[in-house]
Each structure stands twice: as C-alpha cells, then as structure tokens.
Length: 372
Image (cartoon, rainbow, N blue to C red; front, side):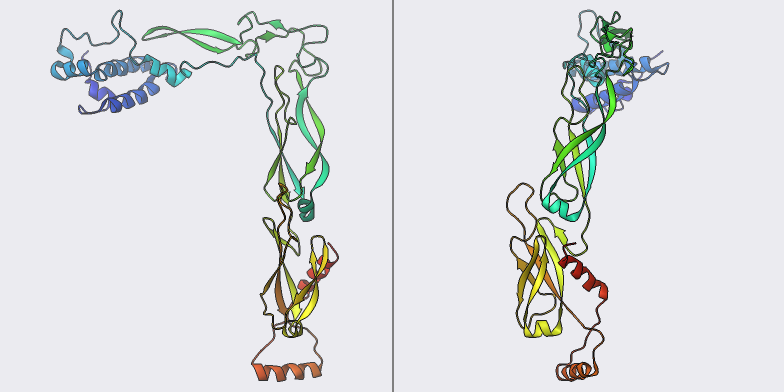
C-alpha cells in the first residue's frame, strides 16, 4: 500500500513553517493518540502523523523528501531507527500526562474545601455591624476513629496493591514501545491504605457531617455583595491537613427612607412652599438620631445639603461617609378658602402653580424620625 503525501497527512502546504508543521502535528496527535482515541485505526493514523512530523520538522530530511518523495532508498522514512531519538514523543507525553512535573503525594496533607454562607442583614445592621452566630453544615473529623476510618482498636493497613503509594503503574503498548503510566490505585482510591474493619460512625470515611455553630463579628460598614473570610471554618482537611475557610457573603436589605451609595447616605426631606420661600430650621433624621438643619430663604426644590460624617463608617476603619439631604417642595392638601385665595393671588402675581403630594411620602419621613 502506497504512503500518503506527508503534507496531506498533516494538512499543511509545502511552504509551511516549522511552527505551522508542529502546530498541525500537535492537533492531530491529540486526536489520534491511542490513550484518547479508541477507534480501531487510531493507532495507525497516529503512527502516520508521527512519521510525517518526523520528516517535515527536520530541515534536512524535509529537503530530501521534497526532492525524492517516498522513493529515495536511503531515506528510511518511518522514523525512529535503532539508536535514534523519539523526536516529538515528549510533546505527546506533555499533552496527556503533564510532562516532567512532579506528582502530588496522595497520602500527603490536603487542605479541606472552602464553604460559603449567605447572611441577610437589615440596613442598619450593615451600617453599625453586629455580633451574631450562624449554623452551617460541614464535614468534621470523626471523633470515634480520630479520622482514621478504622474501627476503634484497629488501624488501616498498607495497601498491598500499590504498597502504600496510592498509585499503580499501568503498562501500555504504543508505536514507540511499552510506556509505563502512573494512575490512582483503584483498590485504595489513592489513600495507600486499606481498612478491613470500618468505623461504624463514619463508615470508614474518617469524616462525619455535622451542623456547626460559629460566632461571626460583622464589621461596621459592610455593604451588599461584599464577603468576609472566617479562617479555618470550612471543611476538615485530609491526612492531617488544615481545614478550609468559610466565606460569608452579605445580602443587605434596602431602607424605606435612606439610600446608600458606598459610604454616603442619601435621603429626601419634604418642605412646604413657605419654608423654602422664607427659610426655616428643620430636624433631619440621620443614622444616629435627629439633627437640626438650617434652610436658607429662597431654597429651590432639588437643592442638596451635605451633613459631613453622618454617613456609613468605612468597613476598614478609614473614616466615615456623609449624608446628603435633598429638598422636595410639597403642596399641602385641604386648604381653607382663605388659604386658597392667598394662593390664587400669589399665582396671579408670580405665574406659579401647585402639585399635590402623596401621603405615603410623609409617612416614610415620620418613620425615619422614629428611628425605624
């Protein structure tokens, strides 16, 4: 059977660079490698791809192939004669088995998994912080067997299949000869130990699932979507490794009167036409109580006043935000006839008009004054 053209095998043209040849080879080798592709002709195709790459990646052999093709009796195309190197085999090994990097000891200490808990806070709880207690389900070391998984009075034995290494050597035939790969021992599941008499509490796992109460100190100034790490409160580690961490994610409820943007607080205060026209001194609810605010005569609706240091404390303890008060001029209801006549006279003089305001807005302000 005649051989296919090497350029056709790799899907490149005759002017392809070395990098293009190598890229095409890697892609095809990944597709047809016997460890990945279980089709009947995969090994033959892989060998064909390898042979084409051996020739086209070598400038001297490529030049001879371009001149003589498969007919040159001195070429010996087919790759890998006695004493020759495996040209490119290390690339394949790197693709599938991670190259020459070290392997993690399956019996070594391993840190436990991290956990996440979502905590819902009231608006002011997030502003001022709080000490609270939460309950989370997590895996802990079994007290009955101290994490060994073996029945009290017994102990795990070294796995006779992997001799305690947690890994087995698996031999496999390839076009380049017999290759030995290391895989997790399926008898001990990589632990290197066999438990003949399992602990009745944890069924040999060495861990039990419990609900654990944890004290959490919520810092003042925490905001919606932020998270806090509680070190060492995650899942238990393995083989004496440290426990994972617990991440508390905060969900902060909105407030009826106050709005928050970072460390600043925003609110609106309803004022009558008389108050803004003539000026007044009013009381404004803040996060810590009521304060007095002077409204200058002629203040326009939409005017903003800033109360320095009346916002949210920085969660890292670096200062405090401000409170911004926006003025809204509202129109009173149920005017007497005398009051209506005065308003009509004013409207005729200044061309003004009024807009009725809903009672709900006043209700929100009243509740804010009460500290709700």
